[in-house]
Length: 265
Ligand code: FAD
Image 1 (cartoon, rainbow, N blue to C red):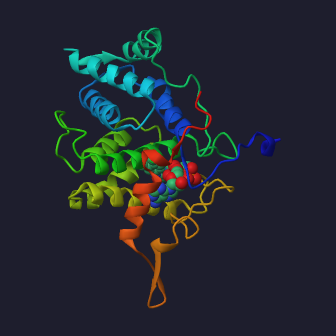
Image 2: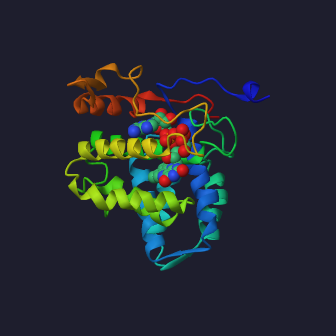
Image 3: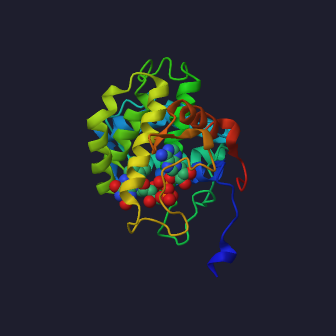
């Protein structure tokens, strides 16, 4: 019985268990389809680990794990890294030192009404919204890294990751088209937060009524009026967004303070 398995959650919250499960899936499943990382793949992975190690507002043990992974990647003089070595680090060395990511994937805010729906892609959007908001609230967090002083650091990392590793190639193609069209117009960390919100809504509009829509979670233009009434306005009888209010809402919704630890063990 599906409804019995369904865990209640609050749509006005972000859940750490979704973010950690997303990282778990990314490191242990998605990356595993690449036997070795080299060239663009290795650079993309290093940038991704840099961004999460510096910006992920997670539990201390998880942040420490990401920092250990980053130090190891930076210190290796190799041009090629076998995926096995990354897995080995994640599984063994880190476990010995008491650092851990959740052992299994479990969704709460990202749970779907069937296993094929929601889950990982939902957690990846959530992760990158959290990261753009963290970057905007802690502008010095990427100091002394290759990504320092770049308002596009998080978005470019997401673009590279989606294009290189994301299992849905069609999604990668669409995202790349959107990025080519307008990402270069982003000039500040706040604009990066809004850019990702706008593009995510474009994807929602395109997917409304499609196969990837979970009937229990219809694709909407987000945030809906119940989540943020002041984000919505009317001009000449047409709906318009109040982007100042949307930015303020995103910065609150995706802030560390709004991430619930429910079900993290
Ligand atoms: P998601 O769209 O995954 O959203 C997760 C949560 O984010 C929502 O529950 C909501 O709380 C919040 N949210 C929703 N909209 C916004 C917004 N505008 N700004 C901030 N937060 C928001 N699937 C396809 O079939 N075709 C594609 O081309 C495709 N492209 C994708 C591109 C990327 C980069 C990613 C990460 C995923 C893509 N997907 C695509 C998957 C798809 O977008 C959804 O992730 C998936 O269908 C699961 O949907 P969901 O209902 O969990 O909500």
